Length: 143
Image (cartoon, rainbow, N blue to C red; front, side):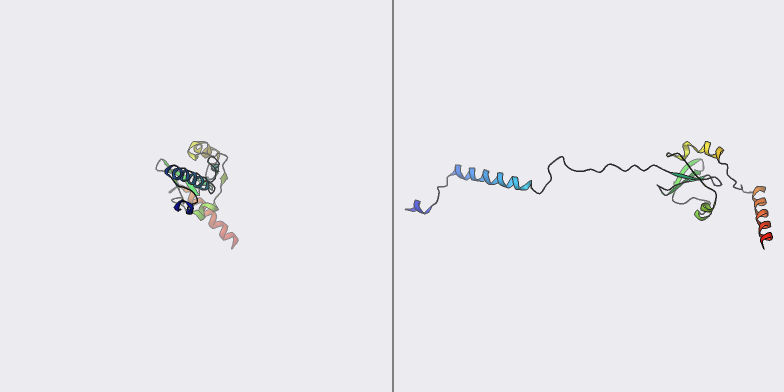
């Protein structure tokens, strides 16, 4: 009579078979939330070419893509967010030339200096005094 109350008879083999069946179903459910392997999107790297503006009076280059100024300092090329020896506002008011190269200014500087000589007065030279005198004359004429 005890056997009539049970719907089925459970032995070791049926328990193992049932467990395998449940694990198989549970394993399938785990893959529903994840994308299939191999379909992960990876964005291509963004390549930004350097673009330089050259300030001949100061022999300084500015890269707008890097937001850095490049120039020779003590015989070595340096790159900084602001140049030494001249304020950015003075530099921006001076003549400039857009460069057509997209690599390091060091590779082109010798040619650039020949093509675009600056008018920067060297310390102690008469050129700076003459420029100041001419500037004063212009002020006298204007006022």
